[in-house]
Length: 304
Image (tube, rainbow, N blue to C red):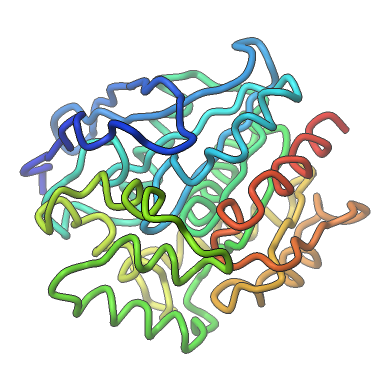
């Protein structure tokens, strides 16, 4: 099953993005399933600073990190925020079947380690950014110095997802028109200005471009025999035994992942003895609701 058709969002969709002055950069990945995939990313801070890899989730893109990038840069960190394949400025496989959990892990592995050759990385993963990022930590622990899990987890399907998540999955799969900005707004406690909503819609000129956001909810393992369950179980076992410092920085208002915070704090060896912050008054997309605050916690964690 080679990559059949890649779409690329026209550049003019990304003009006049509010509070997002970062120059777009691109990395080309040789995809093991055929072809070359272009991944878009932004960077802030000194090129020789400690690396912080900021991974977004569904259905956002690196724009989600616009409040955090300047704070991390000011702390002397090299903050790198890629767009997942199918999102943001990255190429978009047009068929739903081109999107699998394993492939998204492969693509971000190729981006971080083959294209950019990152070392001593602090992962910040939220939503799918954690589902993908935690798999990277488990498979390449020597590349990572620290982990920050923010409103995320590593589902194996052995415990069902909460009802609100099933409602979201069904809504995404059934919507004739997928209103990306509305889904982002529904995961925030703050009210998003029109220009910000437009920025979340920008990567997707029409429905044809939305295979990534449409596919993602269906790729979360919520049954024990899901295609990704065995790999996630194995990764979970590895993660719990690693000594890598593991900060759990969840908001207090996420009905989707909230239950994972105490589990991560308890299960991860690297989490013991750390002061885990709870970001008050923020929703699922805590980068949007309290990005500066989360960034301060990340900067302090890295600077130790």
